[in-house]
Length: 126
Image (cartoon, rainbow, N blue to C red; front, side):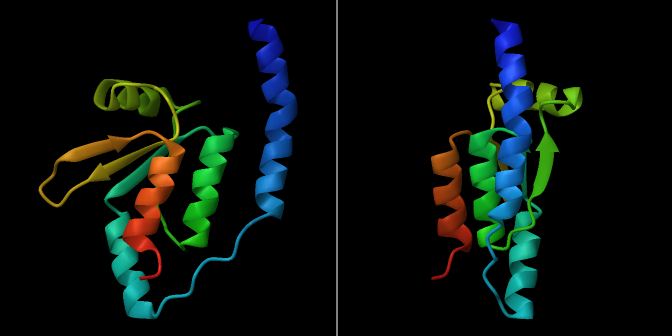
């Protein structure tokens, strides 16, 4: 059974990445100062993800749509990132957005729907 899913991922992974590249949305345009403020806020965020995960692709597409420069952390091939996700976030599930507040507290957000809603609320057009 594991072999079947491994083979399925090997076949579908490149197809999903190609689709992501071909359907690359154009980002929103902000004035220089506003984009600088957004970039500064994005430094407090990190997305733990698998490159070929459909839900991670969905979140990355929304990040592009909103012109967000959020650090991407590979939790599939990087054991340090996977261990941090499990130890600090509580689950190795992806996508997961790590949000560091101004006071240093950290929130781990797991569902792609919730992550996208959060990004739209924080960085979407008002």
